[in-house]
Image 1 (cartoon, helix red, strand yellow):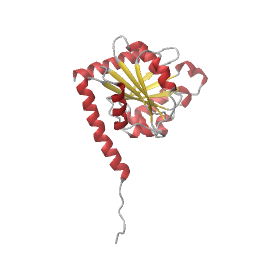
Image 2: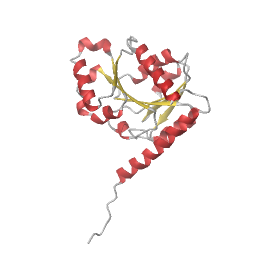
Image 3: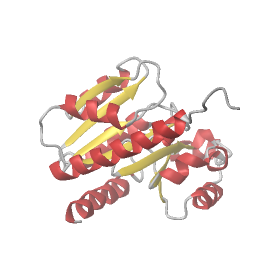
Image 4: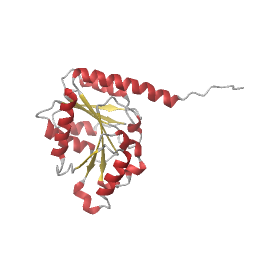
Length: 223
């Protein structure tokens, strides 16, 4: 005879979050705001990539940025110098954002009419991939120094993301990084993933990435 119950808490948490995320997606669709969830390891170049994309997009797209981190406001300070609206989200030690946290952040951005909001998620390749934030698009950055084997070691984030940015092409000659292999490994996890090699430092490839994002926003508005 059983003397206790077993409750699958994790499954329940994910189910509740998924429902909330879908609701948030609909809310954002109704107000015409396209949300991108940007994920990567610490040091991959998320903030630098964002500053380059803002340079490419700000004349055509009204942008808001949410910087998520366990602590500090370093990234928000950097983004604020671009002139776009930005807020810093402190997660209180949590390694990810969920849909409700994302909604709180969007609320704090205010009533400004924004075409695009980018959530720069907490830096790691595991937890952020597990939680649906309500984003219309999931994008990850893999930098050259991290190695080409990451799609094999952290499959979920590659399965969940619509696009992979391969950053730091400027240091490619100095690392044992195989571009053909990383594309092969990523497509093994997600055959439909879009891949954009760039250097945020030199801006190589950033214009092509920005053009693709503009197309995504436009097509989303037309659906």
